[in-house]
Figure 1 (spheres, rainbow, N blue to C red):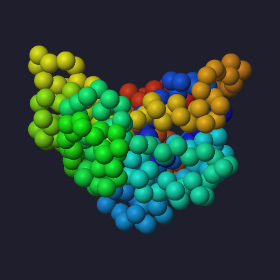
Figure 2 (figure 1 turned 60 degrees about the horizontal axis):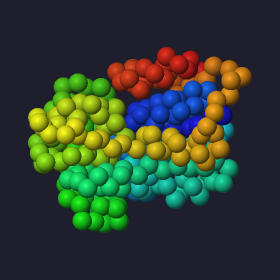
Figure 3 (figure 1 turned 135 degrees about the horizontal axis):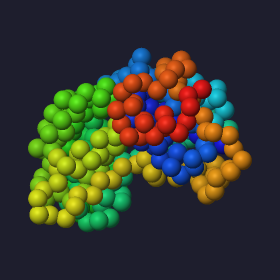
Figure 4 (figure 1 turned 180 degrees about the horizontal axis):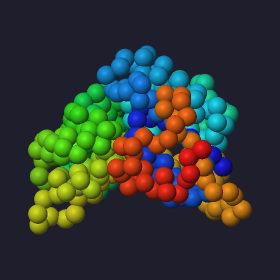
Length: 262
């Protein structure tokens, strides 16, 4: 069984690690676009062209499902990706976890890229799933790039800037960009207020991983007779090793340790 994941960069590591934990025997294909990132500032048409190229590179490895581990690509490119790949390859998009966060009653903050913050897409999710809940949209300029390059100083600075925009009474934070899940505990430490209940972080990695395995009928069980799981890394279509920055995060180290690169 083989699951492919795509993103502009290493934000796909969180969902890939979630797949690995659910199905340690699964082969993984990680397809990203370092030559074209960041995707956020691109026009929807340009972004979709890049996303299709990344998805088609992954499809050449014949996965059983493709996870679009990128909020921006899911917003703008999911219909085009499904039109090209389905029904042969199920395509699973990533949606910010606003619904489960709002179910806790709030107040809720949604950390997202500037392009997503205040967008009709995000506002629609808030209207659909968080009506009546106190929601603050927090733009996080530079955070995804800082995570992508494992720039420790920039990560600290961009998290601190976003935390300063987050109301102190917030009890849940939606991580509205897949890159942010790689620094989730640093975000918690920056936002958590002394003497209040522990802040709840809501990411999407676990849900999309489970949905991909559900779509393939492989959510439960492990193939005990399977060979050691493989890891194929595609960087703008080129077969490479995991980029060094990926190993700065626990999710990247997990994948490197469990799966020899092909």
